[in-house]
Image (cartoon, rainbow, N blue to C red):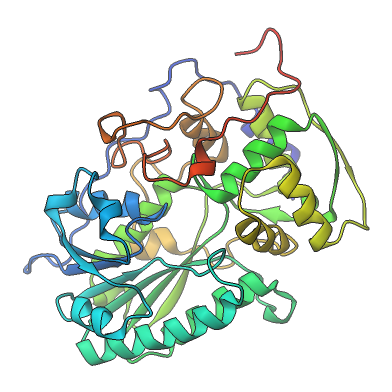
Length: 387
């Protein structure tokens, strides 16, 4: 639970200068001092994280290839001609194997949630096939993005249980795997952030599930990209000394979900939100309630809502020791919100890539982000004399 001291720190001041909160430009991560960087295959390059990670890896000077089911989605991205594109998905074993044979590191960012009726079974099967192909191709390292969850896996939601199972399959592989476990990612276009944005903006008062009191350790999308890029390039003798492992990543602030919404309201210039937690709002009712006020697809929103019944905090805080800290240190929740809200009155999708900056400003929307990410919620309860 956030202490009064923590809340006082979170509530301290705000800058009117949009550039004042921008962290220093990321610096390249050295792979080995005596060797060039690894060849990296990114699976999920058209997704929210992948579309921001690829420019980071290219800036690090790495040779990057991507596996995409629909290569046409990459036609307009500015780095299109800087990468090798393989057509295919995780369900196409031959295409997957061909792509993996040209890489040293496989960066796996794909999840089936929202795309399949039985996403747990699909994730299990595709992960096993991926691991088999990685072993056959002779990949040196797997980097996978997963989710924070409690140690007691018996109480996990189906979504988090599937994430944990996928991670275990990766870690059981003969290929060393680094599983980066992150919680709520803060950045325009992130599904978790968009849920917070729509709920807080549209509802000045709300009846809430008990999970609004659960502890969350949010992380800025900028910092997620930093840790993933570091996991791709860190020397094996330091970050994989004992074989595969998980690394929890989070921002410096631990808050309840309700506190995250209140801080969002402050940063967005909204009045304080009234929340009345009730014990009878089941996960199914919660997802239906969420569907009324957010534009997220129900297949995506429902698993995310159900996972909120579990606390998502860092259990072992050694990411900075193993992978190195982000430039300027980890981004606070309030600073991450300011980056995501730099466009007045909510995010606006840039119509062309010329108006986007995934490398230096990953918290802003990209043209490739989901359609619902650009939806502006009607604002209720704005502070008249606010920002």
